Length: 146
Image (cartoon, rainbow, N blue to C red; front, side):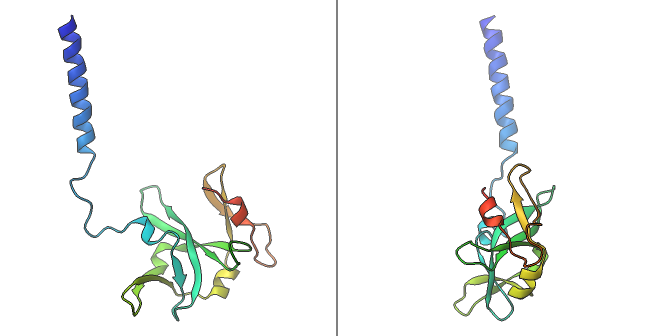
């Protein structure tokens, strides 16, 4: 009986480790970029003026990046407005010092006029921020914690 139990346990362990091994990669994709290349990075307009920074990276159900939440305006996080921009709209360019940076064909004013979003911790998603439609101000920075 002991040998039958030991054989069953060993076969379960072998099957589990074989399954786990088939779910890993031998090497990371050579052309892959990490989320940190976008998350918390500054975003510039086409004239190299800083217009905001990436506050979040949104994925669709298949795991593909679909949008970036860009924080615009404000000072030290106060009065900042979070807006959603399509991922395809953000371009990666190089500066004179050979470092890359993110650009968006928008102005700071156009982003400030865009629909604002706030993070809903209960639903773990971004929702339209209707707190102040007249000035475009947003209190989402104090509501958002991840």
